[in-house]
Image (cartoon, rainbow, N blue to C red; front, side, top):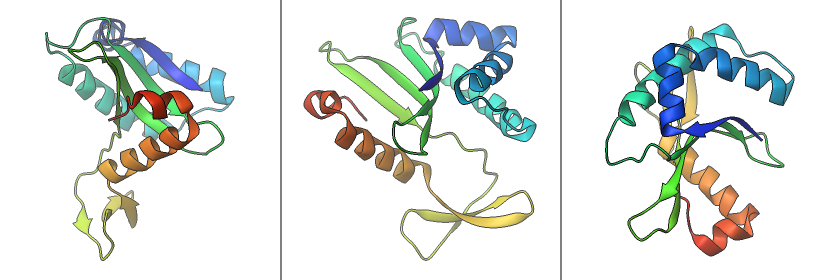
Length: 153
C-alpha cells in the first residue's frame, strides 16, 4: 500500500502550497485507518520540504514518480520516500530513501547501527543506507518483476 503517489511536479506543487502534510495525513488515515502523531509529521514535514528542494534539479524530469510511506506487503516495514523513473537507456529505476531527523548519532559496537537521541532516550537504530538495503532485498525476494528487471537502487 502506498499512502501518497504523485509526480515530482505534483509533489513540489503541494509542498510549495503548504498542502503536502495535510494530504499525507488524510491519505495515511484512509490507508491505515489510524492517525499519525503530530510529532512524527512535524519531522516528516521538514524532510519532505528538504526532498522537494533536492528534487529541484532540471535533470530530474517533472514526470518522475514520487511515492511516500509505502507499506511492504506481508511485513511491518515501510519505505519513507521513493523516486521512480527511467535512466538514459530508458531502463526503469527505483530509488529508496530513508528519511531521518537525527541531530546527532554515535557509533555503536555493531556494524550498521548507531546510537541516537529520540526524545529523552538514546536508542540503537539501523543507519538509513542499511535499512534501505534491507528493504531493497525484501522487495527483490518478494517480487519477480523486481528480480528480473533489477530496478532497485
